[in-house]
Length: 143
Image (cartoon, rainbow, N blue to C red; front, side, top):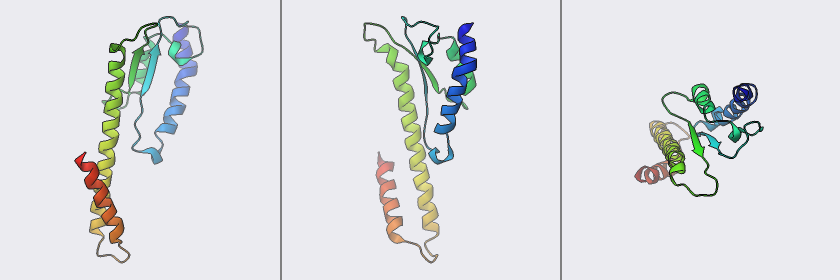
């Protein structure tokens, strides 16, 4: 019960504030991920986010997952041993976020090229800018 109150009163507001900064309009292509680190030796009464028990992850997912993408992941931190399986979900989510951001960037560049190409007959159109856009887009599209 104490974890629910602590989440509701403290951590939910902190996550909302952080999310407001991360999803600001000038960072439109930025991806984000909430990682809940669960340590078996952690006290539950502490004031750190990673010391909340795992069932709170369901509340975080319900409050902060947007659309169909799961942006919350739990990382079980084993004490005294290296467990590769504990990192699998986190690495998969990081990879998904990186690829999504990259795809959004390439798509935005493609739209910028189309817009620039459609304006080529207007006064002030700059071939150098168009050329640089086209070359960088071609490079990223091949990756």
